[in-house]
Length: 150
Image (tube, rainbow, N blue to C red; front, side, top):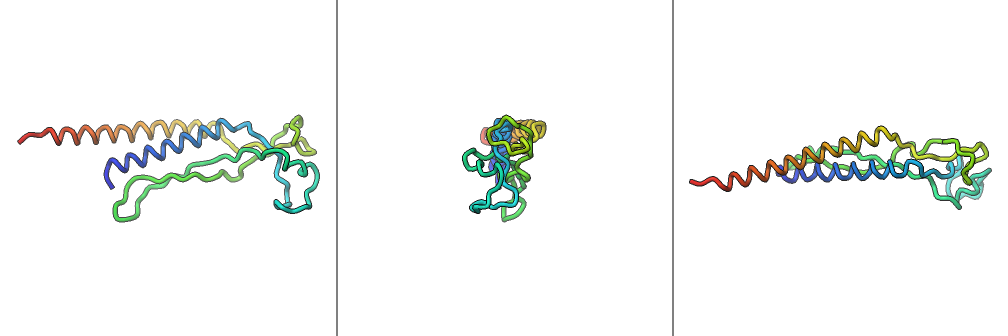
């Protein structure tokens, strides 16, 4: 794998990391009804206030980026980033004024750690800068090699 493709894979992963963190921060207050405990979707045995759950959208499901190096294959190098959901995806939060709150006044709030998301943004920023510098150095080195005269 070339230096250029390794740095490009790092830029791609940093961009994905920034997008996921921004989405989690933007949706941190997107609450919804608590999922019915013990009842699977599609069953008619829905109890209590969970019978109103289908009329309200579910709480935002936070995401995370899993990044691993590409150390296998004939030309190892670079990185791969994939997006998955955070587990558990929600926490119970008190909001008795919400129309979808259960009988105890609880709603489902996204399980987002704001401080952790800002750390992810900072990591994405510095990763992006580092990989851009690698591409810049690669371009400058290639240019200087082509300018050598016999």
